[in-house]
Image (cartoon, rainbow, N blue to C red):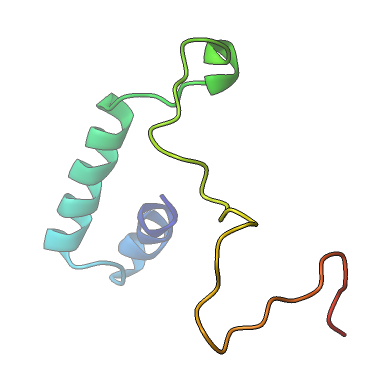
Length: 78
């Protein structure tokens, strides 16, 4: 972590983090190192992945409330 590296530089000069904060950051870094690692989801693509709900894009044929006008498809605002 950046703060612990900066603390290592500043501590010999009498500056740096408070001891309580330095201990807390050290414990936090130890839990991160011992924690679960990231998994590449590319290996799990296929039938094992199931979407948990409907597609987040709204249906195009859905009725709009009164007073709401849709933007024309394919047109960009400038």
